[in-house]
Amino acid sequence: MSAALHSLSTALRLRCPGCRRESLFQGPFRMHKICPGCGYLIEREEGYFVGAIYVNYAATVGLCLTGYLLLEWLASPPLRIQLLLWIPVCVLFPVLFFRHSRSIWLSLDHFFTGPAERAAVHFGGDAPPGEEP
Image (tube, rainbow, N blue to C red):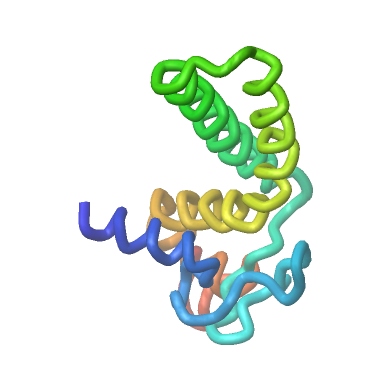
């Protein structure tokens, strides 16, 4: 459990899952292709970050649905007020959470990948010198 929490902490701090020091992003929406510190391959094949869309969607639905239900239970505002509050949240939150969803997806992949596959990813798809992937 400790390793999973450490991996989640690394993801939430937007750090490389390989070295856990360097930032994953070089701009607001632009990721490094390779970690400048350890050489970990961050930008993968096309479609790799589709899972990050699911992470982002789940976080958005979780936040908005929980918020809606809690507000309804605690204050019972009219539906119009609820919609005026939660529609902007549902639109803005995914944009603001974009970086974290990608980082979480990359950290999940790193956490569940075996050491041999991880070594291949560290060297941009090639095994370290003298080793087979």
